[in-house]
Length: 121
Image 1 (cartoon, rainbow, N blue to C red):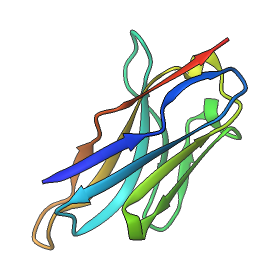
Image 2 (cartoon, helix red, strand yellow; image 1 turned 60 degrees about the horizontal axis):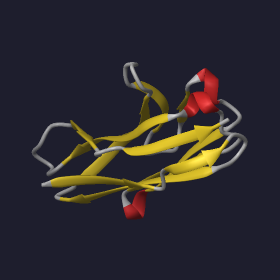
Image 3 (spheres, helix red, strand yellow; image 1 turned 120 degrees about the vertical axis):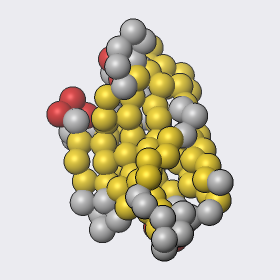
């Protein structure tokens, strides 16, 4: 079994900062790309940022210069540092990982349960 557990969400005023963490645990052989998604109220889940095992990153245009994704491969953990937060950043943030559970398995997608981020104006 594989679990992805997010933490670090909460309520913050506009202009503030939060740091999200997502730790993957369980039967893990290797992790490839890790991503953060956001689902705002009444909207579809959208990609916020992604990071490969080698550290290459991609960001949604609206968060460039404000958010930073990073990972600790030894701890199977991905982070999202969110600065200069805006009310439109409000939503449930989900962690996603593409991983193998053994050397025989295929790459598969796993999701965390989500953590709420609310930015007040």
